Structure formats: structure tokens, C-alpha cells
Length: 266
Length: 275
Image (cartoon, rainbow over all chains, first blue to last red; front, top):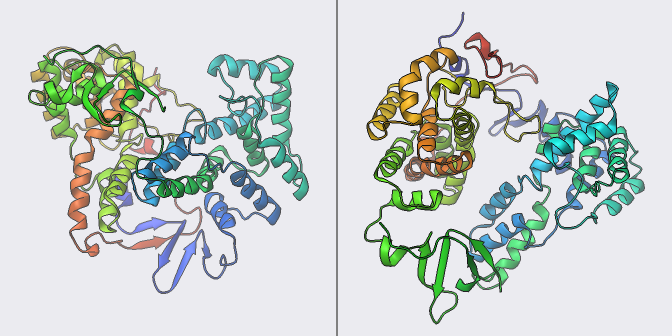
């Protein structure tokens, strides 16, 4: 019988398929007993299993791990890390600092929004190529529409210091060059041939690797969430070692005001 | 010396270069001139819009602040803040929870953003709102999860709730033309087309339009205006036993067994599906 209201179906016991805690007895995590079946798993393995529902092998988990490690920068000048440091300088709590800094990482010109755009573009491009479209035209069209290409180009520097070490690591662990990575390189070639001055950046390679690991854009977005976290903790910790207010102290004269001149309140 | 550019805030230091003797907001001396004569809504409007509000704008903003201050404990954002209170998390954690949940695309500040965008597209004419909403397309790479809803309308009801009608009626006593007035005249027609009742987010979006705010400003101000109730309920929960917010019962299903029903079973049409 059709319910009177769409939400009536969702009243009553909390129905879930992802898991539950049966206090004092067991915990179910995506159909597995957390302590008996997943107790030996690394946190990374559990995290990726939680997102995808799939189990990954040791080599793949090393790739996931590297994707976080290689972009963990304890540099308090970077906006998201700066939030962690500023929380430290006001003696806010570490959890609030990290939560806010990670929230700030969902930015449109770096971080999570770029991750999502990069993998969506890569996977969409692959589908268009499969339908016989031309790569150079796809890239040109994307640049016409968005004026940028997620995964290519960097705001402050042209070269990305993370690419070579990550590629060396991939070679070392024997992670194969999959279709995602090949396509990312082909896009890079198109950009260089047409002198668009956009080089592949870390987000581009990460999206390609995620594609080769079988992640959907939504799964990659969720996976990438803590990517900067390891670099944030030292920023907060060091801020606590400095005097309160010691992170980027700004004099009154440091405010470069460019608004209306002094006036009387009406 | 660290330098920050701003068109909003200016400070003059005395002997201590790190302490302001005079602080001006958009040119107005906050402590020397504004404080005895300006209210909270004046300051908020000045910060967002750049000018002191007119009497009408002040009335709309004050009304909006009352309308949005508390959605009550059933609202997800308030509920989220209460979780912080129940667990005795820091105050900021409760507010961050309320902001994160209240930011959403359905019933939250992102919905207001989308509705304000549609209002601007419709040039404050409610008759053109339906077409503007229907044109709303979601980017495939959008961080906001897709949802087949009409910004500004209740996804779960065909009727317009009494408080929504009361709020709209109140605002039309303050402002006689613009988006709110147009919405008041054409509400029932829009609801008929959408097959959904106008929601408070729809009223708020029209109010932000009449305040002259753009979608980004409206989204930010909406988050701010919704916080007081979340804060108060978090505090109330903090003062109670943790048993006051029980976990409730659970029914564990097999993986993949949880199926959403097609919303079209209840409501149609959906945005983008209309001519």
C-alpha cells in the first residue's frame, strides 16, 4: 500500500546495510565482523573497503597510501594548513583545528573539488574517446567551457614536485601503467603540443591512478578526504609551541584598506 | 610585515601597532559612531551589502533572522548540533556540525544558493521562476550530491506549511514589490507547477534577492542566521543526561538490500524534465 508520506517508510528502526554495533557482542562493517574478519586489516584497507565495499591487495594499498603520503605538506602558509595553525595560535582544540582544515581542503582551486573535476574529466574523456571522438578537440572544448583543466596546471609553479617521486615509487612496487595513466599522459601531450602551458599536476596523476584502481569519481572524492591531514598536525603542534597569536601576526597597518573613506553613520 | 587587503575593515593603531584604537567598517567608525545607534541587523547588512540598510531592508533582515533562528530539534542541522551537546563536544563542534548539515542542497544553504540563482535568472519575476528552476543543471563534477528537488520547494509535501505562508505574508507587509511580492502573488501557481509546496528556503531566497544579495552572499548569510537555534538546542542537550538522545533500534540488512523508492512515485515533475 502506498504510504501517505515519503518519509513514513523511513520511520521506525534504523535500517542499514553498511553496519552496526551490537554493544558487548560484535560490530558488523559492510557485512564483515570488524574484529574477527577485518581485525588484521590496515586502516587504509578498512577505509577503502568502507568507501568501495571492495577489498584491495597489498600493492594497490601501497598506491592508496602513497597518494596521501606524497601530498602531506607541513607548510603552515598553505590555506588549509594555515587554518590548523591559526587554531593552534588561539589555543583551540586539535580536533576542531583538523576538522576545519580538512573542510577548507574542499576547495575549488586545489584539493577535493579539483580531485572530483579531474577524475570526472578523465573518465568522461575515456568514454568520449571510446565513442570515436578526438582527444585534442575534447581538451580544447573543456578549456573553452571551463577555462581550466582539472589535473593540469598549477597556480604558483608550473612543475609539480610530487610527480617524479610518485612515479618512481609506482615503478618500485611494480604498479602497472593502466589506461587511466596512459590517457592522463596523452592529455598532457596534447596540452604541450598545442602550447597550452598546462602541465599535468598531482591531481591529474592521482585521478589517473584512482581510475586504474577502479574508483568512481565519488569514491575517489571520499578516498581523498584525509589526503592533507598528516601535514596539518605538525602545523597545529608547532603553533602551540609559539606564543599565542604568533602565527602570521598582523599589525593594524598591515590591513591594506581599499573601501569607502571615513563617513558618518546615517 | 604580513599584509591583508580588505574593502570592509580598516584599523588605526595607537602606540601599540597590534591594537586598534579606531576600527571602521565600510568607512563607519564602529565603536565611536555606530555602536550607540546601530543594531545587529544594521551591522550584518553593512558587512554583507556594503551600505547601511534602509528601513525596509532592516525590517526584512530582522524578520528573516527571527524566521530562520530555529528550525527545531527535528531539523537535521539542529539535530546534528544536539549530537555535539549529548556527547559534550566543544561548543564550536556543535556549530560546525550545524553548519555542515545545514549547508546541504535539500533544505539547507546550498538550496538557498540555487534558489537565489534562479531568482536572479528570473529577474525577480515569480512567473519566470519555474523556467529558471527547470534550467538548473548540475555539473557532473559537483561536490554537492545530486538530488531531484526544486530549490525553494518542499521535496516531501504538496502543501505550503502555515509558517511559510505566515512568513511570506509578513514580509509582504514590509516590502511591496520585488521577489517577495511576486512570490506572494504567484505562490499557488508555482506550487501547482512544481507539485510541491513552497518551503521556507524559497521565502528566504526571495528575501535575499530583495535585500540585494547574490547567491554566494545569501548562502553565507543563511548559514549564519540558522545557527542560534542549533546553539541553544546543543546547550539544552548538554545540560541533560546522555540518555536524552538515545540511539534507538537498528535493523541490519544484507549489503545492497536498502533500496530507495522512486521519488516520482510521490511527486513529479522533476527539474529539467519540464518544457
